[in-house]
Structures are given as C-alpha cells and as structure tokens.
Length: 267
Image 1 (cartoon, rainbow, N blue to C red):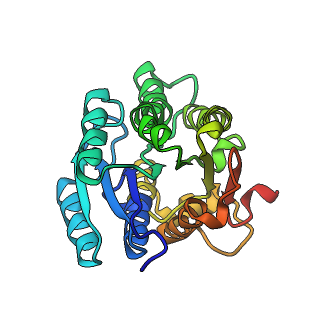
Image 2 (cartoon, rainbow, N blue to C red):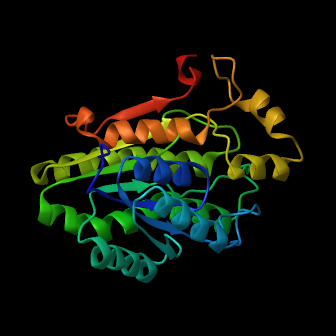
Image 3 (cartoon, rainbow, N blue to C red):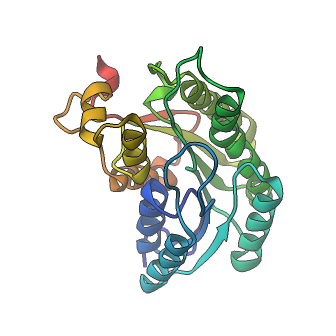
C-alpha cells in the first residue's frame, strides 16, 4: 500500500506541468485524484494551456497506476464550474484530503503599459482562483476535521520581480492567504502551507520565453539567479515537495513558506 492509499487529492492546473507531475506522484502512492484544468486556450496570456486530451491522458495514466481519477474542465475564476467539480469529487470519492492550488499564469508587463485586463486576469487567476477553489472544498475538510491545503506561490511571493508587478502582487497575496487560512482553519485540524519554486521546466516556462522572443535558457540566464548550476527545477521536484507537505511527516507544518529555489533567495 502506498503512503497516500485511501486519500483524495483535488489539484488545479492538473493537465500538465507541476499539477500533472504532482497528480501522478500522489497516484503512485495510492491517492485518488480529482484533476481540474481550464483545458483550453484563454485570452491572456498568449501561450498554450493544458488541453482536454492532456486531461484524458492524465486520467488514463493515473488509472494505469492502480488509482482512480475524475477530471473536470473549468476555469478557477468560474465559481459554478469549481463548485460542480468539488461536488463531483465528493460524489465520486466522498471526501477531499489534499487540495493543491496550483493553477496560475505569468506574463511580463511594465507598470505604465499594463492594461486593466492584464492586471485583472493575473489577480483573478492567481489569487481569487485559489480563494474560490478553497471556499468550495474546505467545508468538506472542516466537516471531516482533517485536511491539507498547499498553495503554489513562487519565489516572487517572497521578493520583487522586474516587469512582474501584477504577478508579484498575486503571489504575495497567496502567501498572505496561506497565513490567514492557517490561523482560521487550525481548530479544524486543517494545515495550510505555501511553496515557492524558482523557474520550473514547464510549458508555461516555454510560453513565457516565446512571448519574449527568447529561448527558455536565455530567460533563465537573465532572470533566475539560481545559486545552484541549473537554469530551473523540474515539475517532479515540486511534486516531491508537495508529497512531503501533504504527508504525516509534515503533520505540524502550517502557516509556513517552503522554498524550492536552487538558492535564488539567498542573494
């Protein structure tokens, strides 16, 4: 039996990247997975997002590992879609033990050139989205008096970022939500933590580079500042951290920020 046998994880932004890697890592350890993803191209930013085919293949891969999966296509900004997915998860599995608020976007913009639509999209997806999803899911955790919420912030949730004021604001906001929710939900035995990766080798990383007219390596060299000699970390590195934080090994970790930055924040 795996470490998470009998557990249920709800993961947003699950079709590819960090969300997919985490879903598969949890499934390998016996967890059943509810995978939520927008599964289509959206107006902003102008790079490729997860697809319905990726969601379907994720379900197949999870089931090949011996775990169960339900998939939902929806936008974290859409309360009705989120509520339906959470209800579908409860109908399928009866509970939610782990919530990984992973869905997010990033794009560059100078403050004097940024539009209201760009600002609103960033804040709504990266900050309001986790609020909407948590609001829907946490009531079931509260009833069970058990649960773990892991918010995927960023190194930019602990520092500033050039031409990233909207992104930085959203990720600092998620850090604040983590601390507030940890206080509010502790009486229900629900832990809340945030993780703060450096750049991650995902399709979003490639998309950002393409929007800048650069290679991912050039973007990493210009902006990452990792101390260790790597341009980025891998999605599986994020997954490994999530598995630790969701496990009983981290049973007293709550309200804290966990950095996975290859040393970036040390300078």
